[in-house]
Image (cartoon, rainbow, N blue to C red; front, side, top):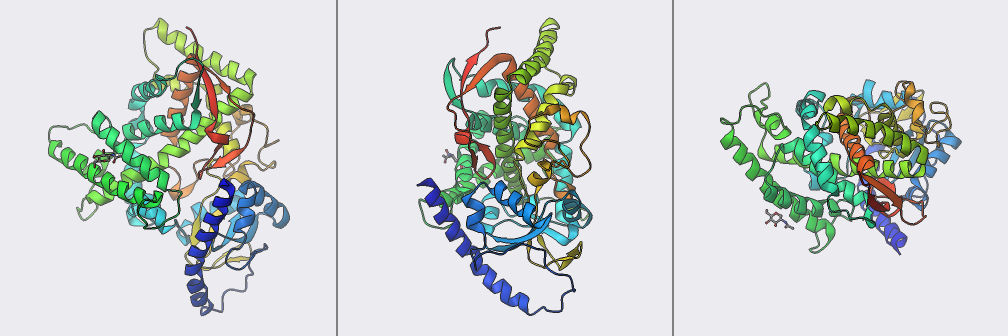
Length: 476
Ligand SMILES: *[C@@H]1O[C@H](CO)[C@@H](O)[C@H](O)[C@H]1NC(C)=O
């Protein structure tokens, strides 16, 4: 039933997109005389629907992998109503995302832009993007996140305080709570509990609507999400107003909201409340499900590799022992010195490749390796295919953290993307994961409930049903 509804949804979505496409195609036909380069190999599938059903009737990764096998590292297809070129080599990813990034603009469905907010930085390119990115980057830099260790640890402890012995928890849901709290910390520093609660409730309605069918019919998830998004704007503008009032009193502030509030462009213009709100929601969105799904995968991988789990435990228990001896909390320096745990994180990022690919749109006809990428086509660098290519990672399906004892070749490991749109929160995400692991392996045991091993996409891959696990508190 679920799968059926999903097809119906995809079908409607496709029709919805193809409406725009027909107009686009006809207008494109006018601009002939393109370069002599030919389109990449590949098949476009049925009219309108293209190969969307093939993509979703199997594991999407099987779709990409079998295409790559058949056509090579660059091939064309037609999915979700868009003619697309997929790129599965490190050089091609670099071409699109770094060296020729100006020829490929970020592209998202309008319905998603509306929910997050059109001024969020990842929808933009050019000056505005550069300005916003600098702000976000500085508030998430190593220097800034250093100060968050104690707060993140407290958030990890608090996320698990309600777990009782023998209880089954939904790992993904629990990890989402943690990544939301850490997002709030990095954005606002400390925030009143009442305001946090309002943000959380309203944001979770937006989150639920994100993958639902966009429409304006009252009562549907999408419409509810739009309404909740409005309430979020109100809550955020109240916070912003309050901060502006207090500004003179509070001198040292380096969280994201303060970075936004203090920013002026070269003409002395400040950011509007809407621009700030859209970017706050954007950061929350980028931080929550992604980090939570990686953490969920790590719990699964460690569970499946008992020897490795023991070794990670030994590393973390030694840190805990030292800290108890010296009566101190986990420190920043310690989080930078967890060699095995860190390699487990990297290997999990590689195997899970939760951002399996990214979307760009060619802003002009572009030629790459003798192939034409026509203006208006979607371009998708396939990170997962690169991360799972035996040429770069020996026995790619094997979970083997020791492979990260040597650095991967350039552009073969891009769990956070690369280039101007690479994730600015990568260090915070890794820090959060390390701290959470420190807390979990020291204090808990977990066993996976059920034996199904499937993957769910929402849109990021997570283990079947969000990985239900039974947890026990380890006695000290
Ligand atoms: C959403 O935010 C509003 C404040 O704008 C608040 O009154 C409400 O309780 C919050 N939660 C929900 C579920 O609407």
